[in-house]
Length: 105
Image (cartoon, rainbow, N blue to C red):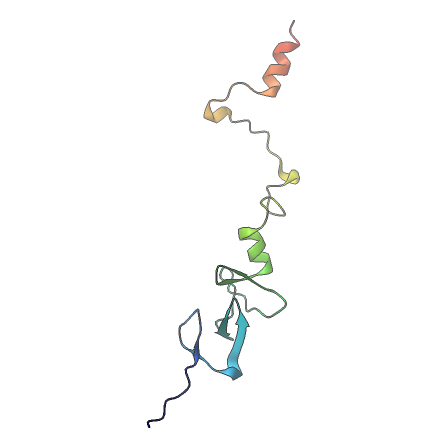
């Protein structure tokens, strides 16, 4: 009977075998320490800052930017309200013009 080595887990990022001494476990897979990085900023991750989305790893900051609520801390919230009412798209009926016209009578 020939010797058959045990099947090693494959890293989801590089596809190479992951040995127990170098493994990081997340997103239903075992990753190399050097492959255990954020999918956006390439920051090395650990158990305290890793998040997963459809098998891809992200740091908490990048996950929030990509998948979190829009406008929180990225210039889209109340601190960055715009007075743009779509005039460049043909919208001529705005609250400002309606209020102006109603005061003329």
